[in-house]
Amino acid sequence: MIDVLYFAWVRERVGLAGEKVETGAATVAELVEELKAREERYAAAFADTRALRVAVDRELADFDAPLDGASEVAFFPPMTGG
Image 1 (tube, rainbow, N blue to C red):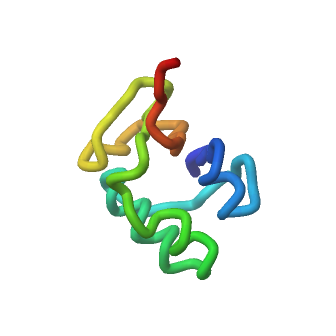
Image 2: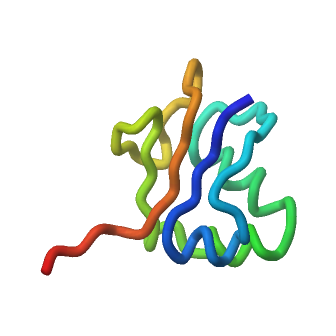
């Protein structure tokens, strides 16, 4: 079981701030594919992963990052300065 958190427009599209997910995914990318297969709202949120950033256990990571031992994955749009 892993905590999955959604921020900004990702949260708006999914309709949740976060959830506990039972997954067999080995990487963030595999988790994304599992989520996209759930419902259309997830497919819409993860349609273009180039527009997303991910953190695994509060550390910025790539989509090929392993999930072995991870307890939290967060998805959010890129931060911009200003």
